Length: 410
Image (cartoon, rainbow, N blue to C red):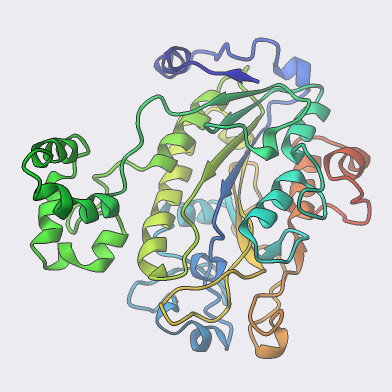
């Protein structure tokens, strides 16, 4: 494992269109292709029913209550077809959908149908039918099968998905991450009353660009509402706080855009577990995800036509909301494909319905597609790996699982 240094990364960004030199041994001639694949893992269990609301399902509004979204709701979702829409925060994704470069897939899940974050994430990353079924990751094994192609993990610690025989570089942000404004707001009364710590805490708020926002929250009104705090954005100042995920995706795009850049990449994000106040939390998180798609697109224009981004999470959420306007761990969820190589502009997957007799254990969306079939479809059609290699090495003992067809442009 090699760590990409801050100096080398900043030098790469400053070079603009110059060729990356971090992977001098990897080129189109060596790998046989210039295609790029980036996997974005959203840890915590994204609620697919909120991100891709099935407003046309007759049971959706009843089960979702105040969380229900539709093209004609107060915050109109972007209509995709007669059944599905896209959360209003996913505005750039909706533009990509209109260009045929974005595809939501519904009712998807790993082969593990339990509701443990750790077990489900391990199953998604190791590529087998069970949690802890392998000590290496399927994306690393895929890179190893691509004539030894190198990869890049944007992470502080090498994630399981990228562990294995292939040479994977790592990079993490050189600067401290933005402190969560909710935490700052809760700490402010404690530090503000301490004569020795009050000034230092005020300076810390200013360095985070939060000083005014904390005053707004304390003074009440719209800026002091729970929604404003949960969204991490003070009222009237949307977009002023830089997001962690867009910065990571911009870095990934900058690395992967070079002619000798890595063909395989990985980015992870946290905070998708929404047991309470889901509308406010996902309003913020989905906006960050949308900005992340835009950031990668802007940084990787040169390779965008040959790129597939797979945004995946470990499971979905319950079909019905709970007593705190949130949802609990479920089964069938949603994933997203983005990129110029995607045959998008449509919703993929088989929708099982939300009636009581259609739900899994009468509470969750029943998964109709194994995530590994999606990964196989991309690795065969986009990265050029054969089905035998996928069934034996990349996703062991998965010969009976066919690659999902029709995901890519001809």
